Length: 108
Length: 403
Image (tube, rainbow over all chains, first blue to last red; front, side, top):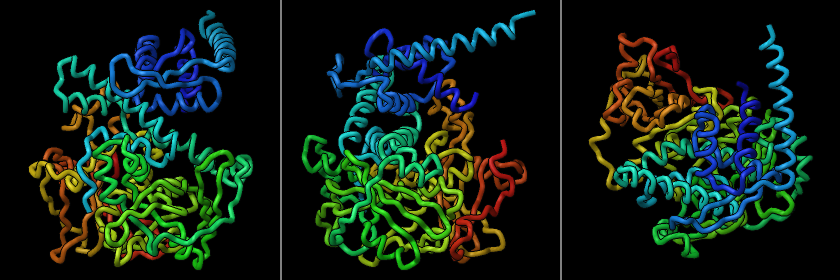
C-alpha cells in the first residue's frame, strides 16, 4: 500500500472514530485498533502528527480538558463542520471505489 | 559538560518536540505527557514495575523523531523541506523577508543549554526559568550571526524569513551548488551558557544544528563531509563551517554521535529520519546518566583495513529477534529497522576501539566469516576528506544491511 493511500485511509479512520463524539489520543488508538481488527497497527506516537494535520486542515478542533485519572490534561479532538463534510465525501468515494472493485473482482 | 540526569520519558518528550517552538511545543509536550502518564498507569495496574511500565509505554509510542518530524512538517517547515520545490513553496507561504539584524550575543558558533537550565528543569516547567529551558532542549545551537559571518564569504546566501502571524522564524540557507534549505530559528526564551557559565538569552537568532542537518539530509544536491575530531569542520558542498571554538570546544564523539545520525540513517536505511528508524546509543546514555551501569558496555577493538588512520563509525542493524526484542511492541514490523551507532578514532596500533553494548554479539559476528552478510558495518568517516566528497565510505563488510 502506498504511503499516500495509507495516509488517506488513516485520515478517514480518524475522522470516522471522531464521528461519535470528542475523543483523546489513547481512546482514538484503542478504537482504531478494535475497529480495524488491528489491521492499521501503528506506532502510537505517529497518531499525534496525524491528528495535528487534521487540526491544521480544519477538519477537527482540539481542546485540553482535565484527565479523569489525574496527571496532565488530555487533549480532546472533535470533528468540525468541514470534518463532517469531508468524512461524508470520503466515505462516499470509498464506497463507490470498493463497489466498483467489488463488481470487477466478484463477478464471475 | 553534564546536562543532568533525565528520565527516559523526559528524554522522549524532548526528542519528540525538538525543533518546535513556543505554545505549540508546550501543547504537544503536554499531550504526549498525558499519553505517557496514562499508559504507564495502565501498565502498572497490569502488573509491571515502574521502570518496565515506562519502557513499555515508550516502546509503544515508537521513535520520538517520527513525532517531531511530523509536527515540524506542520508547524515549522511547512512543505518547505519535504517538497523539494523550495522556491515555489516559499512563495506560496507568503514568507516575509526580514531586514532586522542585531548584535550577536556572543562570538562563537555554538552553546549548550546552561547548567542553570538543567537545574530549573529538575524543578519543573512551572518555574519560569524552567519554561524557557524546555525550549532550549539539548540541541547544539548555532549562533546565526557567527554562522553567517563564517559562511557568507564562502558564497553561502542567507535569507531570514518569518511566517506571518507566527513568532517563529526560518533561516533560509543556500549553499553553493544547492537549492535552499530552511531551518527554524530560535529568537528568544532560550538560555545558553556563556564563557563563564553565565546564562545568556538566545537572541537575536540561533538555529539548531540537528535541525539543519536533518533539513540538509533531504537535499539530493547537497553533500556533507566532516573533518577532524574535536572542533570538527563540516563541509556543505564547498562551504566549510567549524563547529566549536577554543572557548567553547566541541567534543568529537558528542558531535559525531549526536548530530550526524540523521544523515547516516537516511543513507543506510533509505528512510526519512525518524519515520522508520529507531536507534540505540548506549554510549550517549552513559555520558548523560551518572548512574549508568558500566557493565552494559564493553570495549571492542577491530583492526582497521590497511591500518589507515582516521575516524571510524560502526553501525549495526539489530534484529527483532535479538536482545532488544523486548522493546518491540507486538506486530510492529518496522522495528527491525533499528540502528546502533558509535564512532571512534583509530589508534597507532591500527585498530579502532568502540564502546559497544555487552548484549548484541552481532557486532562481532558481522566481521567474521561465519556471517558474511552481516548486520553491522564499519565505515570510515570523512576524516581528512576535502569538500564535496562523501562524508563516509564503507570499509567492511562490503554488503550492507542484507538480511
